[in-house]
Amino acid sequence: MYIHGMSTPERLIESTRELLWERGYVGTSPKAIQQHAGAGQGSMYHHFTGKPDLALAAIRRTAEEMRATAEASLAGAGSAYDRVASYLLRERDVLRGCPVGRLTMDPDVIASDELRAPVTETLEWLRGRLAEIVQEGVDQGEFSASLDAGDIASTVVSTVQGGYVLARATGSPEAFDAGVRGLLALLAPRA
Amino acid sequence: MYIHGMSTPERLIESTRELLWERGYVGTSPKAIQQHAGAGQGSMYHHFTGKPDLALAAIRRTAEEMRATAEASLAGAGSAYDRVASYLLRERDVLRGCPVGRLTMDPDVIASDELRAPVTETLEWLRGRLAEIVQEGVDQGEFSASLDAGDIASTVVSTVQGGYVLARATGSPEAFDAGVRGLLALLAPRA
DNA sequence: GTCTATACACGGATAGAC
DNA sequence: GTCTATCCGTGTATAGAC
Image (tube, rainbow over all chains, first blue to last red; front, top):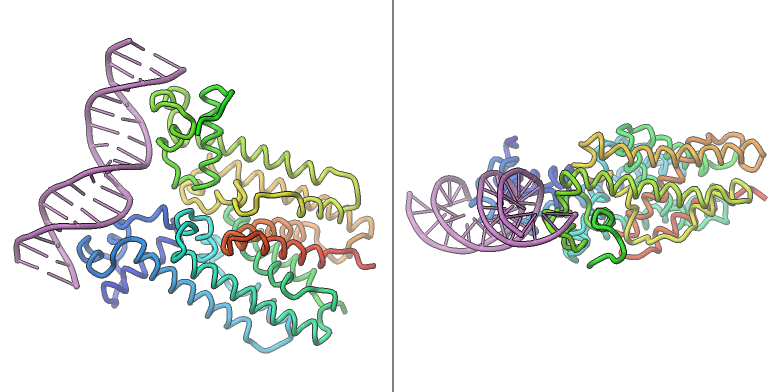
């Protein structure tokens, strides 16, 4: 499972990212990472102090990437509703789950301040960013003035994160899509 | 961490339930279960064929319990909105996450048809049960006729499941509560 | 039913040769 | 930088005594 055209540390980080996504922190062993990366034992411990160090690099990169991906949807043109919809409807590998959100179910990640930090920050950033947009929608009269932007932002993020759970439970993206449709229907500006 | 007044198999199952909740399937070892239950190695393998067998018993029981708890909120009196709100607002140990939903992030659970089945069935039952109630609300004119009951039911379950993710990410139940408030605000029958 | 002994691979890492 | 050797504990059982 060699990853081509990258330095050894890069291959190790990318391999760790994939394995963390697939199996979580607890379920990912140094040996599995080395094999996936085509790197030896000594090589891994030369570049990283151990599993937590490597995981930290992987998690930080995954978090950054998620932020950039989300911002691409959210910064687009259109009404507040359009931008939220664009975020909700963007293409996702639904059955793989969220590579950041899944880490919240990993006891060793939650137990470590360092490993948890990028997860916390990314989801909090997302919530805040969505709240700004919803607030714009409220200010423009697009959404009801009775809505709390922070609450709606939390609902949006929760729907996505929970949609992954339903999709994985059923083995099909359908439940994720249904949840998103439901939310968009509730959110739709009244004609 | 002995559990009093139970037979050995009972203590093993209850211990497994707690450890699966806290650490997931991959993160739970037979040895940890034995210690938590105050049972010996031989004892555990006498009553159960191994870790998957014991986990299956534990997961089935947890799934049943979740169903019963949900039904208690959903079968109450009141309007459709009231019953959905009662489900959303019921007391939860939010920071522990959902003992059923968290299993969807466990690669070994998802990989096993037997272990996955109770998870799938429970969440699908919940979605269906909520859809019935939402449909009643639509039929009574309480909710907009333009809403799809199945979609809204998915949104409700997703919001809860995703709320756990946000709460665990931040280390506080606040984000869960915010998501629920947002959903209830969107769902509220228009005056 | 429960206990102790044994087994063998894996997890996670260190040491030192090249 | 990478490789191989080595280490010690844990994961997940099986065997057989009591």
